Length: 241
Picture 1 (tube, rainbow, N blue to C red):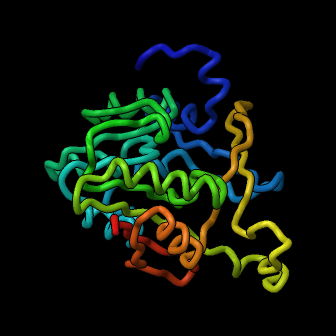
Picture 2 (cartoon, rainbow, N blue to C red):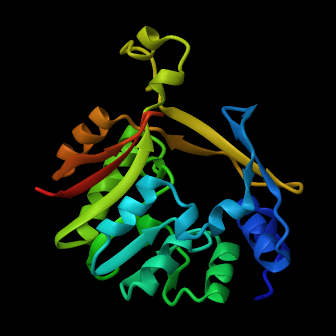
């Protein structure tokens, strides 16, 4: 494994958990906090699932992948490796240096350690944003910016495949959530801790299908919902208009 500075490790709880799991094979819990409250822990092994252990929406998303593929937020590379084995031209994009190191060791051929907003690469036929990846921009304005940027990265007839969850069902007061004076109910703040390692909190947005369609239209994209499940989770396909 590559030697990474203590400063990098201290700022990257998720990457550290992925790195430790790959190095030792021992699963560890990553503590998750939403809006300051403890939520369900994640296990590092989640990021090493094989195809058989993936959820139905992930399998569907991977079946849609074609040509040159950009896997945004690739983590330990579980989706990238599957597509790579299918002889697709895959680029794994990941901001965590620790996770990128693991992907390299696992055999992911093309890895970019940078933010999606810094990417100015060749056009892609498929852009994947999985594991609630449509929410990574953290706000309505950020999501619109993200969609416009992703459109510029698409090859002709290319498309974006991403998922999110409409969490209105989990709010205490649905009427209040739709009050125009209230902030959008799907916006949350995450923080992660792992073995004393804690990063700065970061914004996320669980965007409902109607709002996604509205923002997609503003970005010059058409949005189709191609899968829904019982927990208000959905998979979307977006293409240039």
